[in-house]
Length: 402
Ligand code: GCU
Image (cartoon, rainbow, N blue to C red; front, top):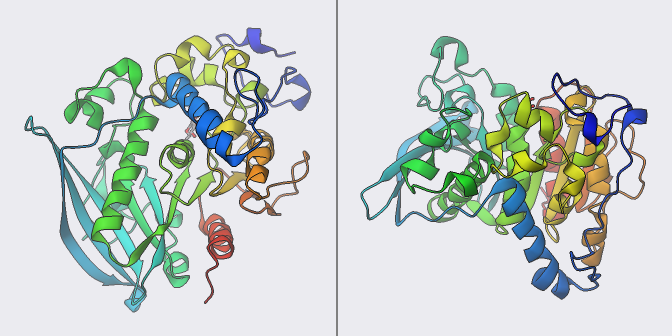
């Protein structure tokens, strides 16, 4: 029988519900000093700040600074998909008075001829060139074999669907903000190259999240077709963890689409089902996604003052859709569901609603409203079926009619 203290090397994941150790899921409305929050004002003045401080300290780190100067340059504009959309490639150049400079390239796809469009703000794995096979896309990120990589993640960017529904989507490569590697990432990150930050206080997820905020700055200032009041942060897997943290720290985002985010994302840490904080730190070299302090708590997640339902709760009173996939047991779909369910009290404080039963819904059955959950049948991935559901939610919540 698994318990908190038998997590050790060699480690094997637990996939037995009956072997989950007894654990408590904290009430997001009860403060660390025991005070119970009863009004939205108290949530914003007391509870929200203390939860944010805890997530910064134990998980995702301090807020990265702003660059002294930011410049945007349009590198390319092209009509795509027989006139359905327009693609832009925009360079974001950040500079400091010290002379340090840092550049990233953002892809933006806009539905042709539309104004005030909602936008999915995303990071992509590998490079911008995996989004579409078009050789005009400037390769970014961890450039490998272009011949095989170009367009290799196009299923994760179903442009026909997204643009056809009147949504825009923007993408930057996570590697270009913080190279996704435990050994070389910190040296190849905005944390070092632009800001010379203290590695004890920052994390890769924190840096990637900073990048999403800079993307939103650019979308707001430089892409007039976008309605920043309908900005959605969307991410899959490690970038789903990042989208969840981004929703908490950047309140300009009005909706989060958190896909298969698993451990360190939506899944409850204390269930020890599938991936755990311990395995991230000790088996898979993923510890750098969090602040170094996490290593001290990864064996005893019950000692952390926060649980991931409280991270989801930080999205309130905005909108959040949490997705799982049936075959993605590593990410613990039930833990992702329970975490969503137990974020509910904060949404209800704002007159909003979420899932109503502690029992997960059957696959492909959406539950909740402003706080919602959906489990796709299939593998760990983000595909058109996920976007179809995210768009459906966003249409309803933003009151979009067509
Ligand atoms: C690994 C990791 C997960 C992560 C995933 C991904 O499976 O264990 O935590 O979400 O990679 O980002 O694809």
